[in-house]
Amino acid sequence: MIPDLKTLDALMARMQALGITELDYSRDGEHIRLVRGEQGNNPPTNSSAPASTVLSPPVAEEAVPSKAETTIEAPMHGQFYTSPAPDAPPFVKPGDIVTEGQPLYILEVMKTLSRIEAEFPCRIVAVLATNADAVSPGTPLFTVEPLNA
Image (tube, rainbow, N blue to C red; front, side, top):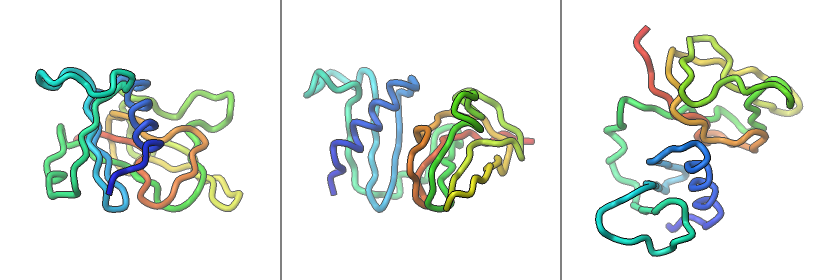
């Protein structure tokens, strides 16, 4: 299954905004691997695209994440918020070291706001969702590198 262009454009724009050079994304049985920068001697086919796209079928290749990185996913349907208030700074940003129990985001479910905390100490590698995104169970929200306590 080929993902829609909106998804690819959104992922590539997010990668560029966060300065991420490589992203593995899996959802509903589709697997996308995006890599920015020089990849061999092949020129990019679309010069306006900020990242090159490599589509691959879901395979057991996910078994070896780089630097023991893992993804924090949405636990249920809701609205994802990065900060406690519209004018407040985000709870976390890429590069932050997070302790167990530290707030990561707010999830609004049926008009109820729940502050979601880190379940383990980690370093935030990337924030994958945008503030006020509607999310469903399994939506990738953060890429993190777990830290030894």
